[in-house]
Length: 257
Ligand SMILES: Nc1ncnc2c1ncn2[C@@H]1O[C@H](COP(=O)(O)OP(=O)(O)OP(=O)(O)O)[C@@H](O)[C@H]1O
Image (cartoon, rainbow, N blue to C red; front, side, top):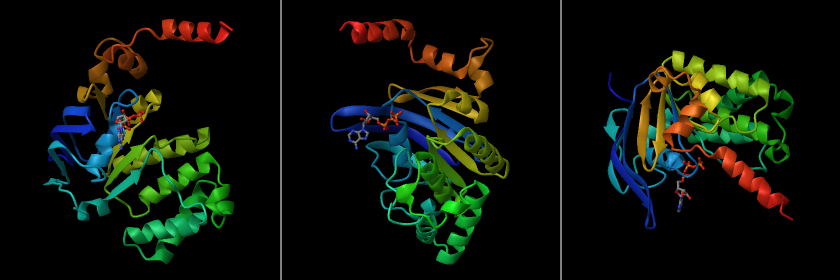
């Protein structure tokens, strides 16, 4: 099966600080890939490079079987992106904003607005369709970002902490949406620190640490016979075993006066 994303020996530094040092992996179409790693490991940077939002220092990236180069835009029409943090235009209503995003993806504004209204209604936000985003809660904003990434029915999704702020009911809906989209052949590159969800929804897991992928497999393969949770595996593979001591030190400093 031809890979839908392929990174080969990718290097990236910010100023003189190396972030990615020989990153290689490939993603098969029709899968959910959980992309995990410690804070600052370079997960968002990886996604931004694939989307052409930040430049690659060395190495190659292919998407949909074609190597990408600065300035390429066509491949992005088939991609949906939920960024880790985003400035949503607060002065617009949800419908206006999503109509605008749909237009950016080549949809007629009226079609995008109609589709957005249907989707907002399904997730319980009917009364907010014509309300300004400035008055939205964190979870409502996040749902708008999720809908914005899906309006144009993309083949490939990059979701960076997509469940940020969503309530428990919305989380259940979106987890199932994710799996249904995968079942209909879409590919989802899912980056998150909520490891129980990553464990539950991912077909494969990529663990990024010290600039490279240090684990790549299904959860069952990574877990071998050990019967650990993904959280425990993460702690072991990233060499972290001192949370108890760190918590004790932290509280000691707080309470020292
Ligand atoms: N534009 C930038 N300029 C300078 N340094 C940056 C820039 N963007 C990211 N970095 C640094 O690169 C490193 C990787 O950042 P990145 O956001 O890719 O990590 P991440 O794995 O997504 O982290 P988190 O899990 O905390 O979201 C961090 O040390 C970050 O401070």
